[in-house]
Length: 238
Image (tube, rainbow, N blue to C red; front, side, top):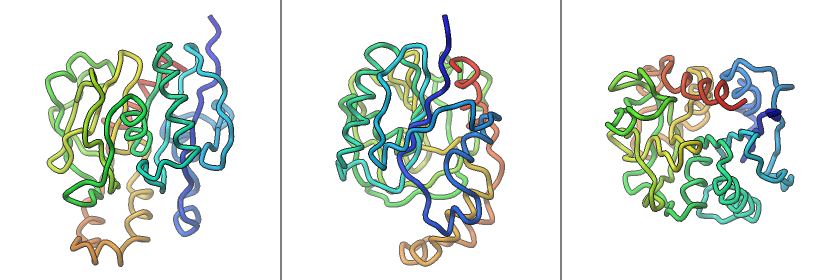
């Protein structure tokens, strides 16, 4: 069996102010996976780039975005269709933030704005009992830190999906759809520097929403458990 290069399905690009500080998403994921960008193929679906046909021997990561799943952009809906076909043949998939929500949407769940508003910063995640059967979370502590930034959420899970972790703010932090398809609302690819750049560029908006950006910045930390999840996925399938 020949394993083909990992597919990075890029669903968006940061604003210029963030890119100037910490670069673009392929750089973030490459560093997190400890892989050179030459080791994976990047498809910028948010610009209309076509995806190759799903392949059971080619794992894919679906990134975060600055778009909203409920906007139903043509490129996003095309990616959702690709996800359905990929899951049907057991293609290994890992969705992150927008990718997490898009996977749930594609497979019959419901996505919408979180009724409690934005979740942003380095937050506590609680591992749930079903996580004991998930290799990507093997040995994970009961509680661990993760970087988050999102306004929308998985409001209703697809049929058969399992919740492996939650936060106080969001009940669907890690969702498993099949033995080879999983997604996280949090960002395993984020570092404190990336999270800081995202928070700093939104200071004014955060204050308007009643949040304290200075306090959020002060709580940033390394997040080894989410990072290990991503690396284990890559090691297992790519």
